[in-house]
Length: 339
Image (tube, rainbow, N blue to C red; front, side, top):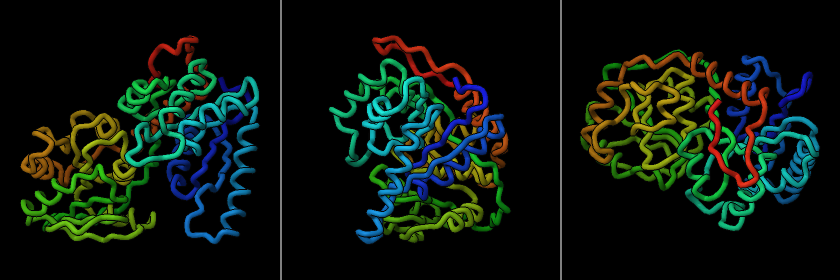
C-alpha cells in the first residue's frame, strides 16, 4: 500500500517513445487523487554519436539507480532488460518498497533482450512471492505470461488522455487511415484486398517500414506526435489491421481524439469503445467484405467520450496503487486482479 504522504514514482526508460503514455498515466492518477513523481532515464540513444551515447547512458543509469533505491512505490513503465527487470528490481530495491513492472509485449514479435526461456523462467521464479507486481493491459497478455510461468498481479487499463481534436472529416470520400510502424503482424493481404474493393474510400497508410500496397497511399516515414494527431483528426476511421496483438497504442490515441476505429473483435478495443461498438468485424477475419461492412457502419459514428474512458483507467490505477498489493502464495498461484 502506498503510505500516507508518499507519491508513486513513474520510472520511464523510454522518455521519447513513452512520453505520451507517461503523461496519460500521470494525468489519470492525478484525476483519481494520486499525485506522482517522475524519473526519466533516456535509454533511447539511436542516431547519436558514440560519445553522446555514453553521456546519455550515464544519465540513464543514474536515473535507474535512483529509482531502484526509491523507498516507496515505483511503476516501471517499460522493462529495460525485458523480463530480467523482475529479478533486478527484486534484488536491488529496498525491503518493503513496492514495485510494479508494466509488460507491454508478453511475446515479442522480434527477438528482444531478456525475453528468452531462461529469463522468463527466472522472472517467474522471482515473481511468485509478490514483491514484484507484474502489470498487463489485457487478460490476453496476462494469460500469455501465465503460460510461460510468469504470474501477473494486475490487469489495468491502458492510460488515456481525453483530448478530442477538431475533426476534419470529409463524408464525400472518407479517409481510412492505418498508422504506426510496420510489423510482421500487420495483415498486408487484407489491405491489398481492401484496396481493390474500396474505390469510394481514400485509403492511407503512414508510418515507418511500410511497403507499397495497391489501392493505398503510403507515406513510409517517421511521423511526429503532431503529424499523427492531425492525420487521425482528418480520418473518418482508423483501421487496425493486425492479425495478433495484445494492445494498440494507435487505437488508444484514436479513442483520445474521438476517432472511430475498425478492427477485429478484441478485448483491448472493447475496453476503449465498448463491446457493442459497430466497428468490430464480425465475419471471418480474412473476409474483406466483413471489413467493408464494418467501415460502412462506422464512418461518421460517434465514439464513446474519451473523458469517461480516461476516468475509468485513472480510477483503476489509483485503486491499485493505494490499496493493498495482491496476496500471492509461495507457489505462485492465482490470476491477475483487474482493478
